[in-house]
Length: 116
Image (cartoon, rainbow, N blue to C red):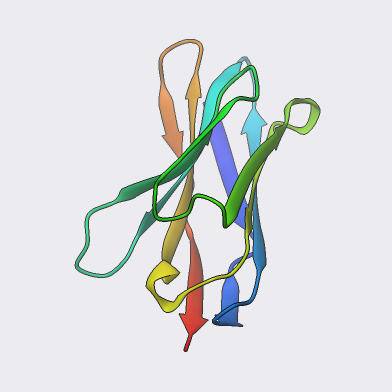
């Protein structure tokens, strides 16, 4: 079983920055991919960014050039650096990991609110 703990959300003005962190804990697991999703009220959950085991990355078009995902394998932690934030980035951001045993785990989410 894997537990995910997110931190770093909050309220920021448009154009500002935030850094989200998500630490995985538990026993007997090995993480393949680490991702951030987001969900705004009334919207479907959206994949924001993924970092693979080789540290290659993939981003949604809406955040390319503004967000950077990274991981620290020694700490089982994934980060999301969010710059040039826009009001439309307002959402609950959820961390998710996919293990080599083909199981997906989710965090509880952290609220990001961008004011105009």
